[in-house]
Length: 311
Length: 310
Image (cartoon, rainbow over all chains, first blue to last red; front, side):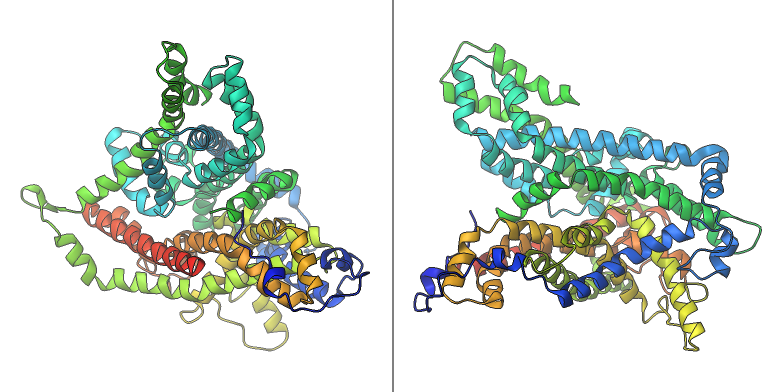
């Protein structure tokens, strides 16, 4: 499975340890290291600092953002009125952006995961003509940068009249070469051949086997792919930036960056409250993903283990 | 979406006038991958081919689109803006990626050592930035970097120290590297950590029996086991750094004098396509950028594989 060579075989001359010595992993449970913990807590502080700033900042007015200390609350907390202002600015376009983002990300993630699962299962459980060539082609595509594809895709979509429609954002996100790779190695382990054979004996068709047995066994891997495609599409900026020019179609990322531009061009004065809206909008838009990750940890960690170990 | 995955398989089921069973299954397999491959051809290979095609033409004032062969490529390879952009991301890659992966490795080993208190909280906390869109990450850091009102400037002001110029010409690449590192260390750490967790405990027991200490175990067992995962993270990092766009594009608004529209290769491709509207040249630049990434990735994969088989 892994490329590990047991060191026991290579260092056979080593001394025997007293019999009561436990394995390192078990004994260490009783010996926590305080210096290491403190060092890692310092590391943690670095990673949480911007998020802490965001939390504090979203309770401030634009003026207070400039006039009070950045890492602590100001005297006049106004988180709720900021949230209200964020959702009412420009006729409530922010809510629309959230819905767009959820739609684009949800459709892309579900579609990409199902396509990858079917194809991964197909590669893992069947042999057919062009099997190896097709898989290598897709594997090679992991290396093709999405941005090198984005501009030609835009030009193609412009010809097809797809630009400035939701499809322009969803379609390119449906193909996840890494998702396919993950699903294939996952399916090789998770779906036993004997089970597939047994189902065939019982007269089940290939599609039915996939839908009733395969998909169920692939569920953890499927969640991983859904989650990572979801993040990729939720966070996508370049593709919607070039594909869409109607603000009503923007996802959060493009919308917020437009607001940030406006804040830059005159948000520093007392008159505009744009910057506070950008900050509060940022906070609102990261909450769903962070929650999704916290709730689904078990899945994405095991899924990543599969991808990282086998190659 | 379920229908796209399902429909192609139906013929295989109805076709019960059995050929050999193996062949029947073979067809079913091909049909399982058909939807993916169809979209793959349409959305990956077609744009690639189209870019290659476009890159061979030039829009002339008279006569419209004219075939010019490799002229665009010759122009691009002599284009100082493109070369500088690629050079800048190459420099970024050479410095940022090793730092990021080394940190990710250290964190993963620390988490796996079992010596940490609060390990779960620390692990999740380091990973959380991955869930933050790069647009928002850049907006946050952009504010934190602020020379007048950012907290670092405020603190240095209170201490009567000169404020750090995070957004100045000489610091910018480092400031960008910090944002990217902040975003992706956790992701890489989780991949490495997940790989470490799959090492069977008996190996550690055997090593301890043979007198290996914690460092020796890390070096002789953990690192070799991590090689596939490290290759994977490195591959993703190559792709990520060479197409750097979001962070510089957003910081450009804050520091327009420092970040120009050709600061990174990808930013340049974007501005050629959408600001100066040179479609053919933009296709050429995209194609060259893609080629550079593929070549660098392959070089890494080959060296990684050679070391593994050696």
